[in-house]
Length: 330
Image (cartoon, rainbow, N blue to C red; front, side, top):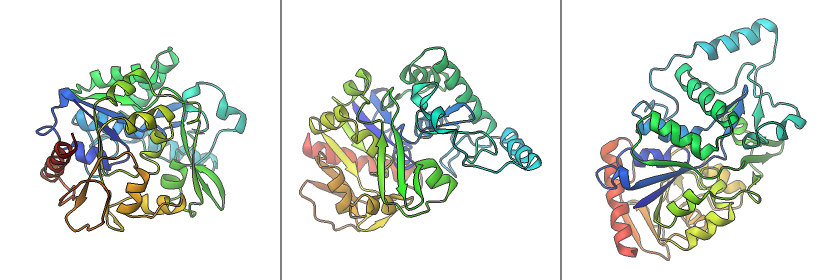
């Protein structure tokens, strides 16, 4: 049994070639929910959905977001209607008092659907409507995720990191903003001064997550701040990782990041934007998989390979390196 911690696109790209190395039936994926937002009344869970669509064989592999060949008529009409009505586009937060009203899981990240600032496809939107409706019927996010996973025919077990709200808030010279506003709405601007995982001090992992963390854990090449940081900010997840075997794949080659905003975010929270900084962020890691061009010295065993993840063959190669790393520290 093995558990992958997933956020962003790094770990899903690794999972895309994992089946011949780690049996899906014996694999659990715990996904970050700090990136989730409520948009136009619907809860959008990007990191859960990337795994859901990947394993459901409908993921858009060009963007690693949304459903391949999805239409976007509702999204387009929302933009047209806002323009016609003279309404400003997003990101448009709901009023402060609404941020802590309604369903708890969406606290501190409620956005208006007027001219929605995230591109949501029509089939993709059906998932969000179904998820939100089941939540409103009284089910937990874990139970709803299980229902959606069954609908998409997943073999792997997919779990949200918590049933409690944790929101990734980026602090900038222009004030605090949710990660999705900063990354999607503002293209990673302005500069990062700090990152807050609002609600993490009151959040807890579910029993299902803690059971999964009893198994060997793999952290793929995801952003250590906003993809893994919300999980690590939850005390019982942090404790569990110190008590189990963990192998991590660096998203860097020394100080060069493969993709995404990891370097800016790490620098913003005082971590060196490099493999060395990733190792500092993961003090519980028993071993690392690094790129063969990465000579960073670490105090734990290292397995090196080409860590490029452009296709399933690349992903299988990196998973084989993870398997080797696990065998060295088991």
